[in-house]
Structure formats: structure tokens, C-alpha cells
Image 1 (cartoon, one colour):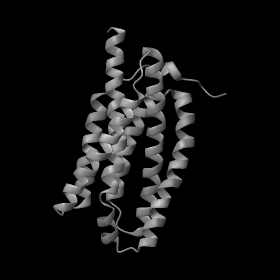
Image 2: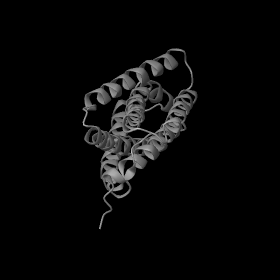
Image 3: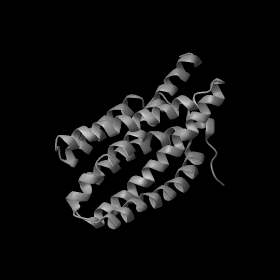
Image 4: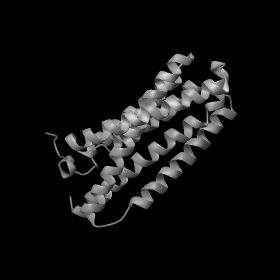
Length: 195
């Protein structure tokens, strides 16, 4: 395989990761009103639950940087994408406020872990190829968020249960991530084992 083909495949794989990250956020936030109604929680309780996502994000930020340095950003991006799809799935299983908050902590951590790793791998691609793709990748994130919101809105509008909604989205994430599993650049390009 030529370098140009390798870079093109890596670009597609990273694009998928950015779309997934955006769609996870968009599809989750589109169902907030339904979740609030299903769990019978107040506005303040919902605010606290959403704040917990931020705590998860902080955990994920610290975790992802270390893991990307140790193993390379490619495998971390790949496995974090699977974890992100799974985390959305467990949010759909929440049947009380406590489990909802716990699953949001996991969701936030997975969002941040994948986010850091995919941005790191995007930087590797830019460095290796000599081209600039970051603005396009972030545009794909925005399109993913828009698409996730539209799909979520459609599911909500048609009174489709949250569990069926997140199962559908997670399935798409798992399939798309599996299809590009071998398209990332070698992990060794940004692998710096910690002392």
C-alpha cells in the first residue's frame, strides 16, 4: 500500500471517530427532556446529573493522555470509540437517578478519552502527511452532532423508547468502528512509553 493510500485510509478512520464523538453528544442531548420525564426528576437534579458528565470528562482527559503516550493514539482511539458506543448503551438502561448519574460519569469519561486520542491521531496524520485536516475533522464533529440531534429528535418525536434509540446508535458506532479498525496509522508513530 502506498503512503497516499495509507494517509487516505487514516483520514477516513479519524473522520469516523470525529463523527461518532459528535453524534454521541448530539443524540444524548436530544433526549434530555425524555430522560427527565421518565425518571421524574427536577431541573436541579438534572443539572447536577449533567454536571457529573464534566467530572467524567476530567477523568477521561487525564486517562487518555497517559494511555495515548503509552500505547499510541491509534489503539486508544479505536477502543475508546467502542467504549463510547457502549457507554451510551448503558445510559439507556438507567432506571433511576443514581444509575443515571453513574452512567453519565462513564459517558463523560469515554467522550473525553476518545476526544483526546482522536485529536492526537489527527495531529500524527497531519505531521506525517504534511497536510492540514484538523478544520475538516472538526467540521465532521459538528455534522455528527447535528446528525445525532436530528436522529434523536426523530426518535423522540415518534415516541420510540430511549433504549431502542441508543441501541440503534451504538450498533452504528460498533459497525463503523469495526470497518475502519485497520485504517489507522501505526501506533508506534506517537508511542512514548512512560518511565
